[in-house]
Length: 83
Figure (cartoon, rainbow, N blue to C red):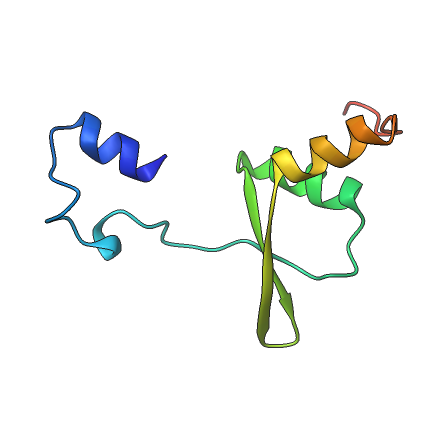
C-alpha cells in the first residue's frame, strides 16, 4: 500500500527510499497470542499487520487476511462482543 500511495503521488519507486515511506512505529505480537487477540489489537489500532517476535527474534508477520482465511476455512466464528 505504501508503494501504491507513493506511485499514486507521482513519485518514482526506483528513486524513493524505504525510510521515507515506512511506518514509524511497529506493533508487535507474541507467537502465543490467540488469533482473536491479534484481530482485536489490529482492529483497535486500525492496522492490518502485526510483527511477531519470540523474545527478541522476528519470527513472522501476521495479517488480517491471514486471520480471516483461517476463520473462514475452518468455519469459525468469533465470540467477540462489540464494545
